[in-house]
Amino acid sequence: MSPKDEEFLRRLDDLGARIQRAAETLQSQGVLQGEARERAIAFELEHRRLKDLAQTHGSASTATLVREFEGLRESFAIWFAEIDKHFETGFRDKP
Image (cartoon, rainbow, N blue to C red; front, side):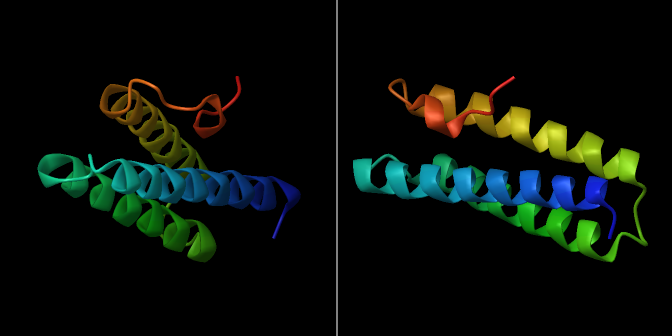
């Protein structure tokens, strides 16, 4: 595995951890219900799908994986900001 692939997997793991922390935070606040819960589950499933693809790497190009990762990262950040008006900066990627 190349350093570039290892870096991508690290970023993917970081995003997975942020998704999980956000879901736990929202659950503890009592706002992870209905559509919000469904979206949280969808983010988790999409993260797992990307992680599986990244680990096998044979079924998707690196450019496609990076593009899908960026889309997931942005969608998650927007969703979380809309759900939790007081979200912590630690959940967002730094530029």
